[in-house]
Length: 139
Image (cartoon, rainbow, N blue to C red; front, top):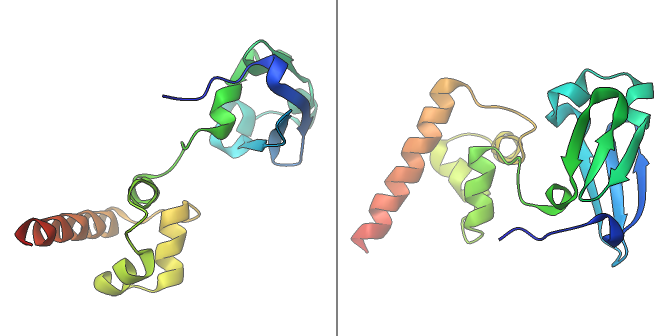
């Protein structure tokens, strides 16, 4: 279950060039990137700076858009490949890349979401996950 974070838990809120950030009273810092939200991605700097805390979120008044505070700390926005490696930390991404015959830096970019694999490569990756699953079932 997701942790509930409320306005009273926030020490400060600020906007950076590419993100909005919050610091909680317990010292944790969370960041949401504007690129991940279409209304924020297309907003002006002025619109992005006009934000405030509001109960359980950060509200952008000029955009009529808000971000839930709990979302700043939830394991989300992971692409499907990254989500698998987050859910199963015992999997080794470098070894997986070797199984696929692709470079580890390229596969790391797929895992962290900085690059998106083509449809054919996505299919290849999915098939390899299934192949590993079948191999594990045989053990």
